[in-house]
Image (cartoon, rainbow, N blue to C red; front, side, top):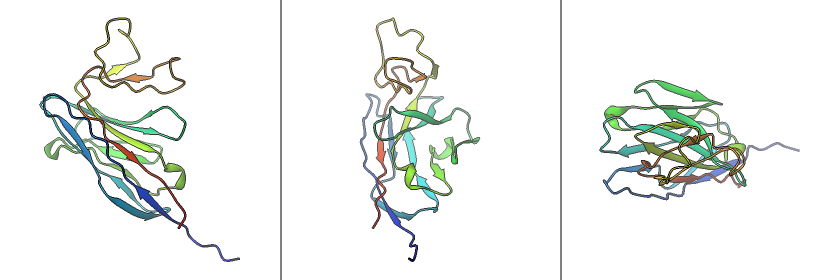
Length: 165
């Protein structure tokens, strides 16, 4: 029979948590329809009072813990991982996520996070935690591969759901 190219709908759901200082991260809103193999762009802009902020993209697939996808530590330097790329542009406060050829398997929840500190591992976890939002990958409670200590001001979520029309 004839093979037809399935069109995938991408549904974006925004969850915004604002910090006390008015720092915020905002992302693409609305319903976006792309065909498999097309360019996907997920916008992330931020407001912050931090002089030196770091941006992160996390991905969480169904029934999996969030995983660090990209981290923007240096301005105007493109970072890439598994086909995803982003550039931290401080002059317009953006860290947009792109993938050149989106696949149905890319359906997941995507988080853009902002922090003024970078902590590798879970050192200091025995102290009284200052953590607003912590994200671990691997099995929960086994090993924390990356933590954002107490300074995450906003954490929106994008839910990408691919459906054959």
